[in-house]
Image 1 (cartoon, rainbow, N blue to C red):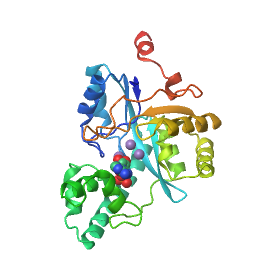
Image 2: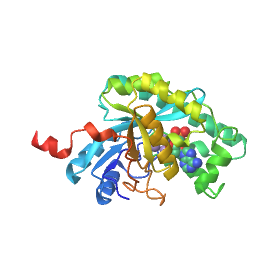
Image 3: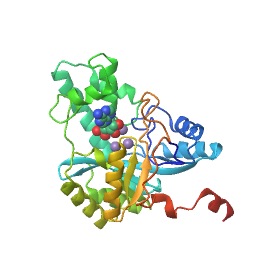
Image 4: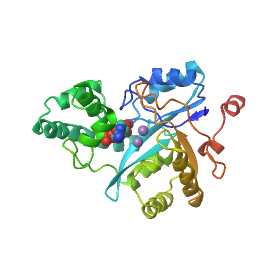
Length: 285
Ligand code: AMP
Ligand code: MN
Ligand code: MN
Ligand code: MN
């Protein structure tokens, strides 16, 4: 089903394969009206995306997907509607990119020790000079023939306990929410059904998130099935969070995920955009 809102997507500035301009054009072609660019730990694609949006009639929401370590687990927090010129946000994101740069070198060294040379430079080349994500390592390992597909490469090389995995300390939940607030954005927990949490642990996360000023839960996600979506809608209602919807699009290489191809938000939770000014309101203001 087509959603006019797609509030989670990636460009070449992190681990997507389309440039911000190509991403905006594809979203427009797919019928999306409001797109959030939410690259991992950077807003460096926002200016290009905003410029492209002006010429395609799309509304571009500047965003970011922040890497967070919470109770020993890595979770992702989206900042939607952030002012990408905010110094506090930029300082925080710059710190995370330093963590990424050190991690990438160490991942390369570990892979080298397990008989895979050249992974660091290979991943770096695939990142076209921007930040390096595990996705770039995964693409390198698949491209070089070490593994047959992206699912297996994460499973066998890039997750906890596997040869290319390096544990990192990302932002705290409190830091992520304070940077997003400083930049005037709304915080949303990304793809909540993907974390290996019990209901009790997820409730602890949501409680803390609400206390720190969080706004939304990504109820509809390209990585959620229908059951995940209904379950997360119940959690959103329980914690008075609004519901966000995003494909988590990374590029046309993955045919299972398309911009704007999302199920509707269940009716028991308000969408996060319910109080956003619509394009028509903006034009008539
Ligand atoms: P990083 O933030 O560098 O640790 O990389 C995390 C990224 O890897 C996520 O944003 C996804 O794009 C990608 N990823 C994680 N797990 C998988 C998986 N099982 N299959 C494909 N991509 C994955
Ligand atoms: Mn990613
Ligand atoms: Mn994510
Ligand atoms: Mn994402």
